[in-house]
Image 1 (tube, protein in one colour):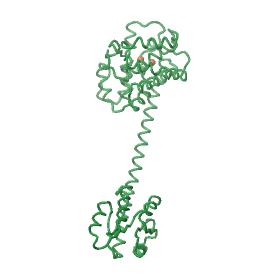
Image 2: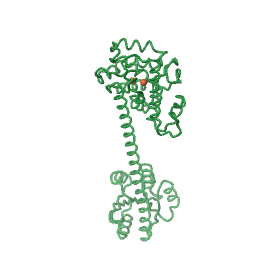
Image 3: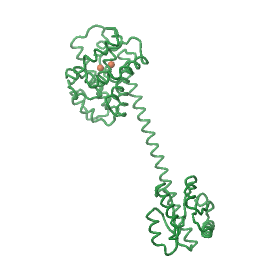
Image 4: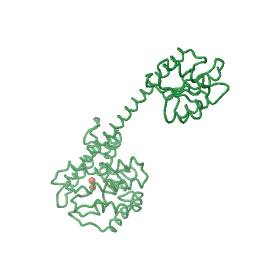
Length: 375
Ligand SMILES: [Fe+2]
Ligand SMILES: [Fe+2]
């Protein structure tokens, strides 16, 4: 410790500086810097960060106290080790120095043993403190790294699920990407936080994940569905939500969708909660005629309202086996016509504000004719 410790002595009296330096040298310290001017010392400390600073403080000169005060403010007194050198009568000065952040004091004329012992103690405390701080920083970095890895693996799993749903639905994959992007633009437009916007961007592509649980014979049927078959398809909302409730051991599968929604809201993971909400509510309609619950207006979670519009807009704008792609103007007209019935009017307004951006996204993420269907 002694060989590697950097010590700075700040004292305008050269004899006092020399004595302190010699005593510490005899005590085993070899890296000792001496400075006479407190103002110069401040800049030197900034660049060299010594392990311990000895500052002369006295009634005659207040520069030492000023340096002490400045250093304790700049570095936080817990992170800098300062011992003040005073005279016998300077009781007030010593009290003030402690208040400002000095760790200890030594009275002149020095007892050589005492000066070295006090420097040893303060340095050891400082080094222990630095070690703990360093270890805490490593620990904090590791936790942040693990959290990032966890987020990435969550995201990877979610994306994988999305791909599985696309394969099942015979989709090209670009549809779900576009729905995610459109939804995030709309989420930003209605004023959701950047965090919520990101969760929606990641979760909206999963809106139809529940179609994994719908038999192929019905899902890919080229003809019109019977009422019974349509009811089975509608279950994809509930199935999708349950996929994102895997960690909820108190949840009973096939509960009423309202119960499912309650459980989704209790999810700890923001991403899984958002994904569950979207899977369950992306077919709800503003006027209460949607499914699976029949929620009305703002009873429908904002994430579901946003994804509903993005999903329908993309379906209108894409060629499907049972219909051609609508001209762009017609897509906008239909969305506007459905404002207040199918869609939240506020989100339709935002949609109109971002038409140009949505159009650009569509061009970048265009695909070959999709077989995906919006039931
Ligand atoms: Fe759907
Ligand atoms: Fe869709």
